[in-house]
Amino acid sequence: AWCGPCRMQGPIVEELAKEMGDKAIVAKLDIDENQDIAQKYGVMSIPTLIILKNGKVAAQRVGVTDKSLLANLLYESGAL
Image (cartoon, rainbow, N blue to C red; front, top):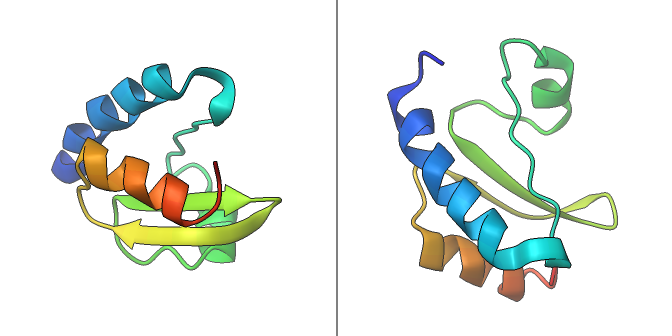
């Protein structure tokens, strides 16, 4: 709630999630409330976008990421 870049990233992720439909599961996580998960994935800065495939990190990006780059990461990582 306090992170300006995260508030910018949210609508981008939500729009992409709608476009992906059931091709991908999209989730947002408040690291203040889920510090164990943030630690597990080595989140040091936010926003951090993590793409998982079969439970393993397939791609990771820090900072606000536009929709087209995020979609490319999904395809290039093999997550889709």
